[in-house]
Each structure stands twice: as C-alpha cells, then as structure tokens.
Image (cartoon, rainbow, N blue to C red; front, top):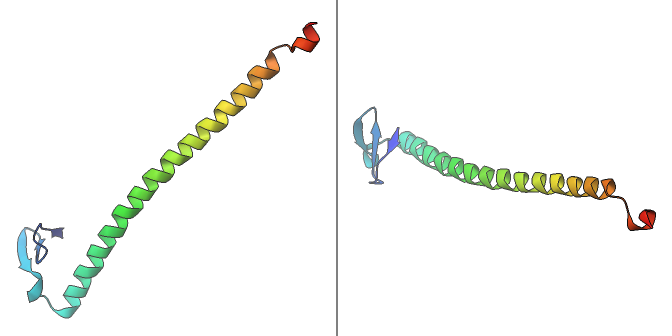
Length: 81
C-alpha cells in the first residue's frame, strides 16, 4: 500500500481507491497503517539521536582513557628533580 499526496486516496498494487469507499474495517486498517508509518519514522529519528549520542559518549571515554595513559607515561616533575 502506498499513500498518495491526496489524503483521501490510497494506491494498492497500482490501483487508486477512495478511502470514503472503504468499509469501516478497511478504514480502521488504513488508520492503523498510517499510525504505524508515523511511529516508524519517529523511531528511526530517535534511533539516529541515540546512535549519535552513543558515539559521542564512546569517543569521550576513549579520549579520557588516552589522556590518563599519556599522563601516566610522562615522568612527573617531582621525580625529575
């Protein structure tokens, strides 16, 4: 099923149907599909946000560990004096 720009027409297998000609059960299914399409798009959007945040936190952790390793490898001034 494909949604057309016109909200009152649905295309199924290349054939256009007017929503007002559908039975109540068919209209219910159309509404379910539209809602699920909206939720799917929202979840993809949220997943993009979570993925970017996860990458940022991972990079911050890696950077923090590397800084500690570099600090541990450098001789302190107290030992050098």
